[in-house]
Amino acid sequence: MTHNNQKYVCALLFGSATLTCTITAQADFMADSKGELEARNFYFNRDFRQQGARDKAEEWAQGVLLRLQSGYTPGTVGFGLDALGMVGVKLDSGDGTAGTGLLPADRSSGGSQDDYAKLGLTAKAKVSHTELKVGSLFFRDPVINSNDTRLLPQTFRGGLLTSQELDNFKFTGGHIDRIKANSSSDFTEMSANRIGGTSNSFNFGGGDYQVTPNLALSAHYGQLENVYQQYYGGLVHVLPIATGQSLKTDLRYASSREDGHFRDLDNQAFGSMFTYRFKAHAFGVGYQRMTGDDPFPYIAGSDPYLVNFIQIGDFANARERSWQLRYDYDFAAVGVPGLTFMSRYVSGDNVERTAGGEGKEWERNTDIGYVVQGGTLKNLGVKWRNATVRSNFGNDLDENRLIVSYTMPLW
Image (tube, rainbow, N blue to C red; front, top):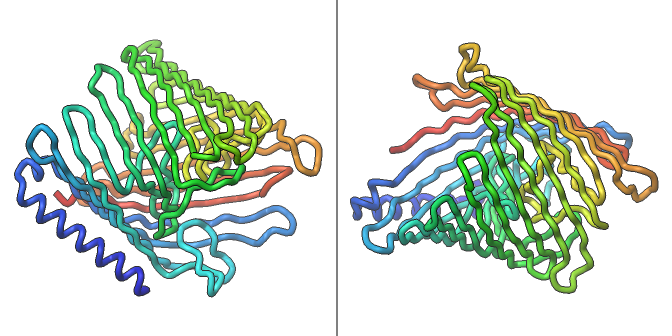
């Protein structure tokens, strides 16, 4: 293990010990605390199928995540502390097969580093139903969304305020100044996917209103300072049809334009997903459309909140249209709880190619997962994720991911 990573691990242990001592000092602080340890084994293989491309990217790595969450001290204003320690270790990465995003790049060898570690500490305060967190953050929001699709999750640094003082209404707002990528130990400035530009300030805010038990509305705003502004509106409605049957409607719209004088920007993104659920089956149909002269902007390294953002592609090129068909099945219906299956297909067209003509692409995903429901191995999960991508303007890919994870509560 490198000297820098030793320092990270020492910091993790020190932070964990400090948190444990603090918890012991406050009974109320301890009562609501949680601790869990997750082991995550990740194999990633991506074959490049287009002419002239590299052969493949293939790596295997082991990750360990320690999550500690305190309760709150007593009083009108309660205080707490959370910690997230993460370590990633390379198990296999042959010559020329690095670049999967599981491990940091090793510039001296052109491959991947043997190991890396990172520590996130988050101070928090709570008054009534309003909570403020400051430090390392992992959260999901329509205009800024953390990514957890590799060995270790991507995190932000900043402040996050959530408030639920009003019935059926949740306010979320905050400020982010740095991002730490999945395969990095360091915080860096943020940039916008596809359109470039860097910034050390992302401001966001918005609300989610549960109008009825079956209808939710949301409105959010995000600003990557001096790069782009984004306005988002969404609707989710679940229509009960009969016992074991329902129709879910998920509508999303975002309008993005430039902020400051970085460059002109014009994008409107509309997305819709309709899911009919019949007992253990779910059938989904989705449509996504980009209008304007530019692709959909979002913070590079994070997840865009788009209905057709799937395993590899986001189908968010300028003026792109895309359709999705999806099927899910829960094997609990046939006596195998914990076993699930998903398959989907997305096809996009109307993309303006640099070389001229219409750009087209498609992607097919299949997920099979199983989580042990009881006994000694309870919470042991195995998931296989397969994807195929074909495009006349981008990469042709065949990809497989095998993820074995085990989460153990510490108390």
